[in-house]
Image (cartoon, rainbow, N blue to C red; front, side, top):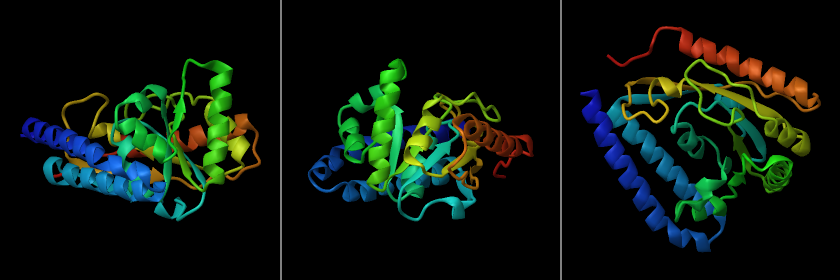
Length: 242
C-alpha cells in the first residue's frame, strides 16, 4: 500500500509542479510578492498531497522563533526534497540558497531568480563565496528571509555533517541573528527515495543565535544545537500513523 501511495503522490506532485511552473510564467512580469504568494500556494498544495495521499503530517515546533516579516538567516538541516518545499509555506519571503545548476531548469529557474533565490557555485572557491555574501547582503537589505542548508548536501536522519564556511560568512556580513532548524524529514521522504513513509514529520525551529560571535563560535554553537535537536527527533519512538 505504501508503494502505491508513493507512486500516486510522485505522479501528482510532478504534474502539479509542472503546471505550477507553466501557469506561473506570467507572474515574472509583476512584483515578486505575487510570485511568493503563488509559490506559497504550491507549497501548501504539496503538503496537502503528502498528508492526504501518503499520510505524512507536518508538525512545526518553535514557530515563535520564525520571523513574521523582515530579514532573517535560516540555517536549516537538509535531509529530503521536502525541505526545499516547506519554507515557501512557513516564511513570508524566503530566498533559498541553491545549487547554481538548479537555476538553469527551464521555467523553474526563472521563477527562482524572480523571488531572489541565491545561486551558489560549490566549486567556485573564494570568488563564489564573495558572490554568495554579496547576494545575501542584498537579499537581507530587501527584507528577505534567506534559507541556507549549511551542510551543503542532504544528510541521513540523525546525522549532522560539518557545516560549510559560507554560512558563517553570510551571518557576519548581514549581522543577522541565525535561526537554526532541525528536522527528521528523511525518516519519511528519504534522499532520492521513491517510498514515502507515513507519520508526523517535525520541523524544529530553534532559538535564534544573536550576532556578535566569532565565525568559529557561531558555527560550533549552531551545529551543536541542530545536532542535539536532531538526535532527539530521530532517537525516540518512530511516530508512524496507525
